[in-house]
Amino acid sequence: MTAPLMTLTWTDHLTGRQGFLVVDRLVRGVCSGGLRMRGGCTLDEVAGLARGMTMKEALHYNPEGRYIPLGGAKGGIDCDPQDPGAYDLLVRYLRAMKPYVESFWTTGEDLGLTQDLVDRAVEEAGLVSSIQAVYPLLDDEAAARRRLADAFAVEVDGIGLDELAGGCGVAESALAALDRADVPYAGARVAVQGLGTMGGATARFLARAGLTVVAVADIKGTIANPAGLDVEALLAARDAYGTVDRSALRPADHELPGDAWLSAEAEVLVPAAVSYAIDTANQERITARWIVEAANMPVLPAAEELLAARGVTVLPDVVVNSGTNAWWWWTLFGDIGPDADEAFAHTRRSMRALIDQMLARAEADGTTPRAAAHAIVADRMPVIAERFGWYR
Image 1 (cartoon, helix red, strand yellow):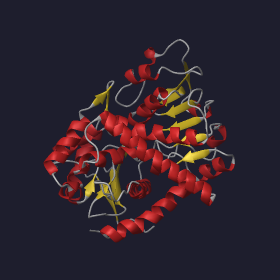
Image 2 (spheres, rainbow, N blue to C red):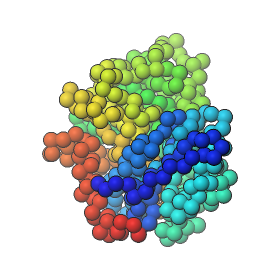
Image 3 (tube, helix red, strand yellow):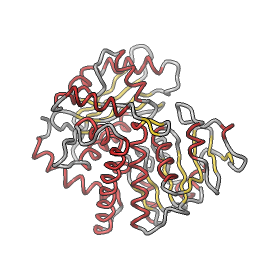
């Protein structure tokens, strides 16, 4: 694949902190990719995420669908989201990025930010919407915007549909892998790093499918119970950052160090928090059969090679967590309505088809699932380019 179309580094005039925007590719003149905020965020990190967004969009290309994939992009701000000045910094970043958001970059929540916070900052920065660049591509802008707003208002058992859509996709990816290996759900154990938007929703869907969630990790440490955690109780006891109030734990629940989730006795590990969580050193502790990348770039490439050599399958982020982005566009473009059951059914069908295609390609080519995903993207990119061009 080619170098990014555009990279931009912004320096805040008040604090000296930096923010980044990388546009990897445009399709129909527009690109899509969330905005993250974390201390230590770098341009290289954002560039890798932008390339991943190009892949996620291409993987969901369906020439029969209303949603036509966009290009890939990503934004990042080097700041702890819990810093007292974080929100004001976010507003200043968005003011600086206003011409790009207005013209071609559609964005939304990512690590460290919630969509509510992004929406509030977008309004304060003088923008119409974080996704306004896509509006000219819609057949009926008013109806599309109303449909998405209605979808964001839907809640299922106390959690918004916008949070649940991505977790549904991650969970379905794990379930598809278990099905291909003829592993029954009952008795299959899961450990999840991160109980925020993606990790929390994934834990709910997997628990409701019959798997046993034996460990979850948040910023305070790991909560474990070999007999299974009460996922719904933990979800109800978490704060806006995904940190669980320990007073909600049951007597049989144990508090362990923060990295204990890695070595949990589980078939499935779901890193759903930070990037680069699994490296060449700590991968040795993993005994799980599958790692399902709910977070972006949680497994370092060298670690993935070592894991593959000892039979651990990594289901890559570019497929696994692509359901969140796709759900936004399926809803906005009208492939689905603002209904939870319809959204979950469409997500499950689409994600299962992608996982099955990727794993079948990996088996046929004798490669890893990530390499297979890259091969599928390589097949689709020229088709998209031929239909829509590189920039228009």
